Image (cartoon, rainbow, N blue to C red; front, side):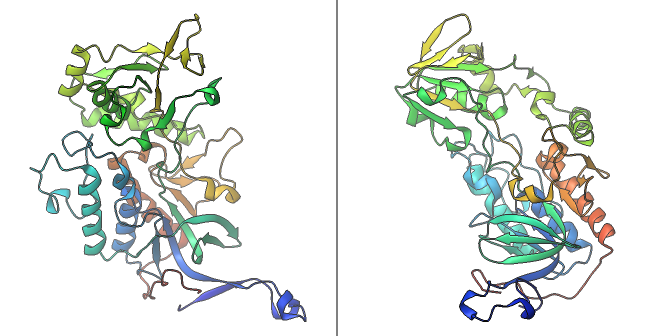
Length: 396
């Protein structure tokens, strides 16, 4: 590699016995590391590219996945381009430039990765994969980014890890005693796998109602949510979007844990969900109070036997690797600032894209642009000469 920092024993402190000497780790130097290559990460990388930063030396994208596609490549097969909420264009290249808009029944898990792959190739984005970021630590004016392969030394960070790696399942009394199967949204593949079983679907988000609709066509279902779902029986306007984003943005600027965008926008009442409502599938019940070995029990003592509990209870931001940077408040929130609330108030060298108001795909595009511009301004950097990328598994 072209340029390294050493992080380990100096010559003066090396023991006389070479076998006892601590290992010296070399860190590949780069100005900005982008962690994650989904919509938020690719948007951020594109704008760094447009600002003149050179690939490899100016900026580098680290991606845990083995191939392009972000979390889309793990979605269930029945989630097609006709049923997905929407695939927003990345900056500089339309989705329709790669995927024929008429192919509505193509699984999103195939179409979006093809789009992302073409996007990375067109703009020659320096995406290094598969590599898992283990931890990020502050080292004076730089950050030390330790992965399962290389170690990197960066001046600034754009974290775009999303939420897919951190599924959330609430802890209800008796959950460990349940004798049936418990799964999360990310485990779901096909409705046919549940045929002949009684399935309890927990959650009031878009994924929950889509999966509920599918499973209800092949078997008996019960739907429970913490609060009464709100359905939106009209088109989602730009004004609706701005209002929803503003509410979430206000929370993160005050250091509160961001709420769900869907909790603000409501659930779109699609033709499929209208049909499900006619079948009685959307007859929601309140949350149970406990889980029993055979099913669930409500506070009034009523019980239902079920074979499967499917937790469609969302995800949490995947930020554990940033823990040493101490960006969270005592209650777990992060105070965000900057034009689109991507900048961490405690350290302007850190931007979170895909967190809070930028968690939606269209929000990630705008946030990627803001993060790239603000971070390069903070660091005072522009176009620089390129260095080659590290080889996967190389020793530095």
